[in-house]
Length: 460
Image (cartoon, rainbow, N blue to C red; front, side, top):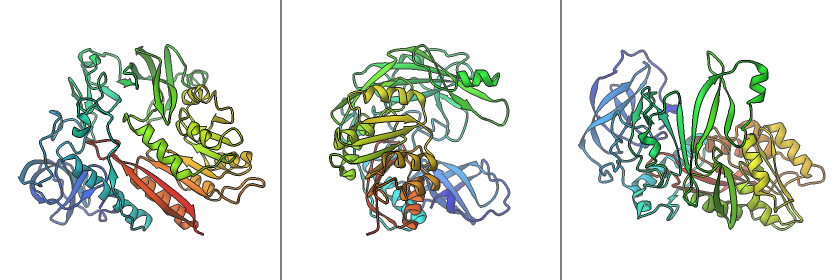
């Protein structure tokens, strides 16, 4: 079960703060498990299927469900282990969901969630195994699921201390270290400083162990001319992300490069990349290499073919696809973030038949790109957590251009959210496509997050 298929709301008095004994049922998408009490569904954190726990209700907005933390385990699962992080407990840091679960069992829970989302949202029965990514963390931490996260965005408490937020809360839990953080990140010296006047501090490390520090703060947008000037990211010194729209005053995020290199260096698929310190790169040390290998294997591109790379970022998959099609082929990437497009131009300089264009990924943009390329053999996409959505999916599924093929022979979908992936797969199956393959990887140990690579092909 997930929150989307909970029973219809009913009128109930608040249970906030109430303690109840619960028999835990299955794991749900989002890092919690499901229990039922007096006709209501309860989403319970810090527990495991099959356990008997005493739980405290932490959130109740009325209706048919509420949320709780397991504050005492009365009968434990054999998969339970002591959390290696001292901040992973009820009322503590909300960054990790499964610190209390043995690693192999974590992967089993994630596999159950992926399969359940495919069943519920895509009407597909599909066996799922979540695979380890392999060695990537030092000193045996890979086996412990620690020391892998190479980018952490710390929140700032009112007194200037850094930490991470409690689950579904703005409360900042002050930290002196983060066990899943990579060396130089989880134990960064920034955690011992006070950051008055700053909203968040971001720390990122590259393959060479170089560490960059960025600070972020929300500032009001004063006038349209100022908004336009700061809409894109600037390289060197201060950098500015796009506008943030809230219910009140319009703001933008002002980002300052505080320390370390402005460009971080990574390797994947036998190629070297330079990425601006604030730009996206896979946070697990093995993820970029493994995902590149899997995307190329799924794409099965030949020399001279054409490919489209959506949400292309700094050119990771664009470069790999370019290597597969060679100088007689073409690869076009679409990416909305100006800083990433700037990085991609440098990373693709030795591959002139590949380029990344700055453009929001929309249905119209996909159709225009396919037409420009005169048809494509394969489309690769790595969308944000919300997924591609029906408009973009439909544009890909019916993509045609000039004398090119009526539609691509394959879509390779890299997904960080199984529910969004399942919804987009359902769009594909409704339009005459099929799920031809799926692999899932534990790119985020100790959390509920899982990365999937799905291959979609037209029904013959």
